[in-house]
Length: 89
Image (cartoon, rainbow, N blue to C red):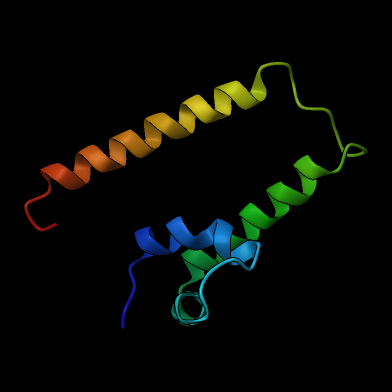
């Protein structure tokens, strides 16, 4: 089974916390083995988790979490809208 980048990005969190089913994890891993972009997204996400989880590194500004969640919701809505309007989907 071939998986596209946009699907791998949906699995990044589960991949990092090892909560994906073994079959899905294997499919994602095969994609990551050959896709530099998705590997970079994985590395960046991992680094962000490390940085934001360590109180010694820096303190997030007030309201950061709320702004981040709002931005993510907008991005997800935009992608969903694009997929619904794409005749190839």
